[in-house]
Length: 134
Image (cartoon, rainbow, N blue to C red):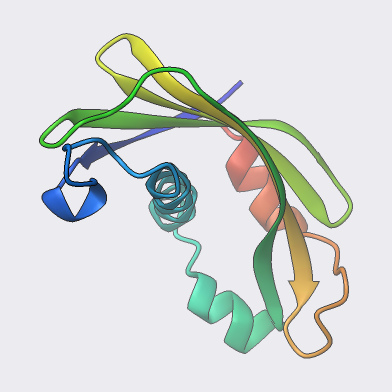
């Protein structure tokens, strides 16, 4: 199963006054990793919207916070596809400091028609790219 890894540096703006990363910031880190995975595959979400009338939106998240990340940590976010079907993809994502798992989540992303916001099947070329080996 293909895995995409994206590095993230924790900035002061990501943390509370104690230097601990805000719980919601982990979601931003995961979003960046999914976006950068598409970008690395040559898939531009702006072009998808303009030319294919397609956009992606998070449908649901199941998240586990295990250990805190702190200011100036060098993290990496791993992303894998757990399953894909029709108009959704479920991503397994983990946030690590070295080998230490800090946070993990299952993120269901829906493919939507950009005009109606109704489910729209994910194009095969996207699924093929996401499931291919790097």
